[in-house]
Amino acid sequence: METFEQKLSKTAKRLGLKIEQIPRNIAVIMDGNGRWAQQKSLPRVMGHRQGASIIEKISLFCVDLGIESLTLYSFSTENWKRPKAEIQALMHIHSEYLVDIRPTLMKNNVKLIHLGRKEGLPEPVLKDLADTMEQTSANTGMTLALALNYSGRTEIVDATRKIAEAYKKGDLRLQDIDEQCISQNLYANNLGHPDLLIRTANELRISNFLLWQISYSEFYVTKTLWPDFNKASVEEAIMAYASRKRRFGSI
Image (cartoon, rainbow, N blue to C red; front, side):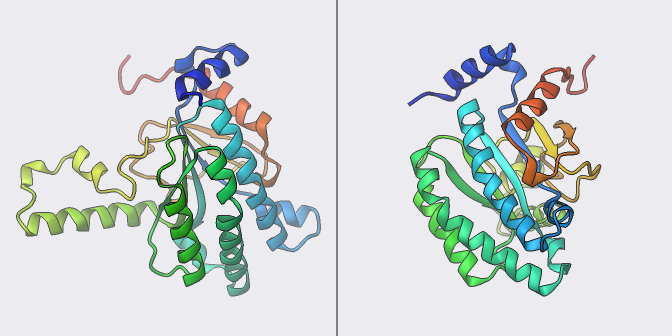
């Protein structure tokens, strides 16, 4: 089985880049499902179904590229404000997806993890999510992080509560609370921070996504709607990333 470095080397050679010009960790704000359906005079739920089918294709392509982690903004805490029928359809699609993708994840050595609060999610979704994470927990390839019932602010609040509880119990000193401490108490403390953040559908907002983790991420916005996003779209984003000079505050 090829390592990340071997895959990245092949990707770099094919794209005419250096390995260090390729992002190791990618995050995507998947937007445009509803507009895609509207453009085709279809119900919004059909856009969501099409969007779900794209996830597997993009995930597998990222595996082939040598990407270490792919984080997808699947359902935000703000999305509960949508019509009840649409929410029910979205939850059903999530359950179906979490079951259907298991063979693909296992075949490609992909580990699924969850970002977000479990409270509020329907029982079928929680069960399917837990079962898929358990089945893939020993996989050592790419990590696929599903931000489901997620909020960047809520994640920081939850991390703060964990830190406060540890301090209250005497397990943590005041001087121990630093950036590393906060990072270790986020939903997935071993998940690499995104080198590249992609947003589809030409929206120019962060939308409460990975607020702590994207401090030095490169942003890439495309007019392409998520259901139309494909391999070429991923490579376009990578080439845009490769053209940037990441200074991290230096000259």
